[in-house]
Image (cartoon, rainbow, N blue to C red; front, side, top):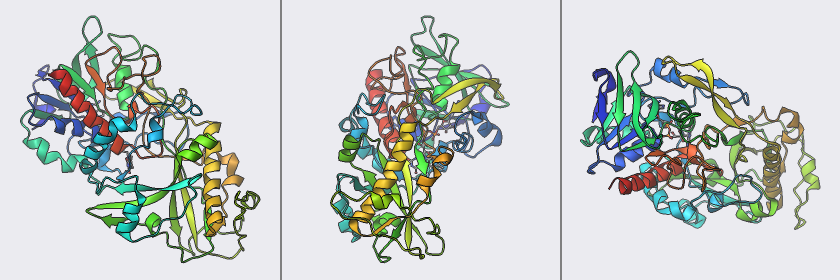
Length: 503
Ligand SMILES: Cc1cc2nc3c(=O)[nH]c(=O)nc-3n(C[C@H](O)[C@H](O)[C@H](O)COP(=O)(O)OP(=O)(O)OC[C@H]3O[C@@H](n4cnc5c(N)ncnc54)[C@H](O)[C@@H]3O)c2cc1C
């Protein structure tokens, strides 16, 4: 059932069992899990069914870090959230992404990939994806009839991505939520802060305000914040009336470790020695058994362990002969990096040839100085806005170069072409030449201990037993996979846990 919060009496109270704040991928997934259950659920959503400029402006803030980061246009503040314009690329995180990697500071989730496996399977159709098969590449080469590259698994592998239509959660699940009698979605309802009992150990009330409308409060047994990777941290920081510094922030960790995928489109080309080389598996989308897929190059576990690297993926983008980076700058360094097998990349002539561009997506090293914090600037409700200080490190830079180098070397080893890009001559532009993946993670990280994280393995805020967080803000590390399939899997797991707690 949908209710416009503007029509509620001023100072009224919504009494419910579960209060979910935010109706994006995470919030809608949790709300759907409760449809038909004995519990009453109230979903508090800032926007309506369509974008509204004044509501969207509530997301405004400052960027005090890398200049290429844009915090206003990336997030959408209406029913369905940012899935109203997501691209729909989906893949689970790798097993190694959950592990403590001694070369990766602050790595290690308190749960494993195995803990999430059944939830990933359930998340797959919710995101509108086809067969759940991410490990067995033969499945896809057989189904598509397309060859994969014979990569050296000491370096790279082909990794499968599934493509969502993309599922707009607000459109696809609107009717179902509209019919639900025990789930009420309050639109135009802006959470301002969470209040606790006198001992500050339990959330008792969510304070909600409408633009040009009433102020209401929500009382519930259990609260779940699902307002996106930045706003989850902002709300905890704003909720500082009962606990100084904000809820869950005893160690000053809320807002820290802000991460996004590092995206580099360097014009780093592989000039193909055989223009007929079949790379369709990597270049195009393929329909298989009701879903769509494509493939990328990705680092292998062997490579990561041996070279102590973060995880990364590389998209192969076909550049037309007319439209490609001029091959004026032959990249000679790669000539010197002969493959150990002695199969050296071929020398390239300076004529125009068919080429492919490499688009790199790198997992960043978690960095406590990369962070979101409150400023003294205010939104139209008088609430403090955020400043985002996205930082990357020299370790990230080293990994960027090595990843591109490895791709060029692999093409040389296979005898298909060689690198001819400009990235290594471009070092002085780092890091202003990188882009953000628009995946906001890490600001309420999951950990085994309140000393090192904001939520525990159940996504419960340490020391606040009835407050939970859904979304990529809980990711302590982010692999190279886009986050939404994992967000939905974690949301399903959280819904199961919440039901257990309530019963
Ligand atoms: C251009 C773009 C392309 C992307 N492509 C991909 C992709 O290909 N694959 C992928 O996996 N991910 C992709 N993403 C990321 C993806 O969109 C997010 O991971 C996903 O939407 C996050 O879900 P969420 O529910 O955590 O947050 P959101 O979807 O952002 O939802 C948060 C909700 O909370 C509401 N809200 C916020 N503050 C308040 C408040 N104070 N009170 C009440 N409600 C509030 C908002 O209105 C919103 O509805 C992309 C993102 C962008 C910007």
